[in-house]
Length: 117
Image (cartoon, rainbow, N blue to C red; front, side, top):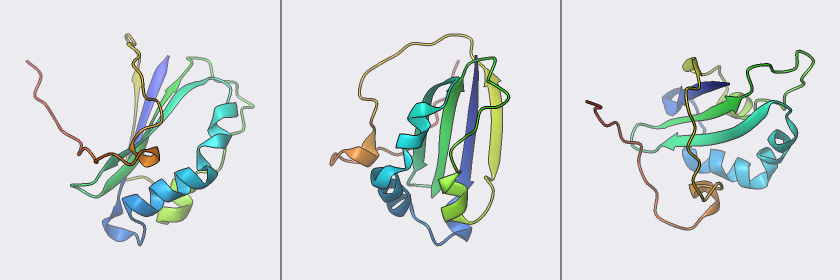
């Protein structure tokens, strides 16, 4: 299994985290439910730093003929991601609440970096 992490710095775009969340509510999530080999896609937002991105958890063997939905974030933001990295998955622990803040009326939580020792 593998995880891809991508994000954009929104400083050069007219899009905001709020406008990108609205696009998710308007249906951009649905096409990803049908992608073979994709276990999970998380759309992520860093409100404090103005960054938007995604984390995608894939099977190790993704079908070569697998068509992917359009990259709505790149279309809306207007440029390719500023950061893209792939990682091997060593282990997985699953929790609850798969929909996230874009679909709730609750308070937003900023991304935090914690030093691991």
